[in-house]
Image (tube, rainbow, N blue to C red; front, top):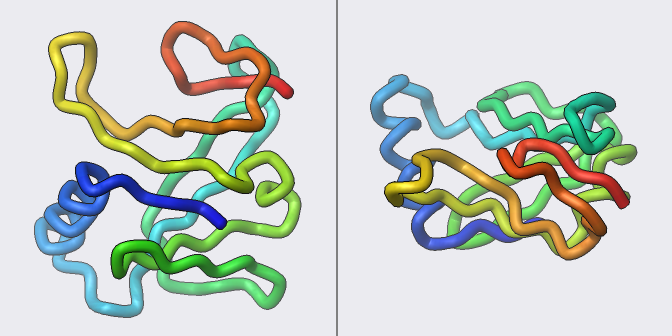
Length: 108
């Protein structure tokens, strides 16, 4: 399961309205090679699910993950912060053994 915090949910809903996306759109989360810790998070809006995608719905938000990425992301929470130390989405990943200081990459 992939989870979404209340703060991230509110921000996603605002972005959907701002971008004028219809109800077919969802959040696609994936993991790619790269970043200072070896693996990087990627998040986009999408409206075309692939055949083998894993689909999760939390707090009314649809989150889609490809089969390879789910191995790295299972149990992760997507969150959003507007604090002084930075504004944006970030991932609270219980599988990560190390993360970089920017929070955009990790390793297992």
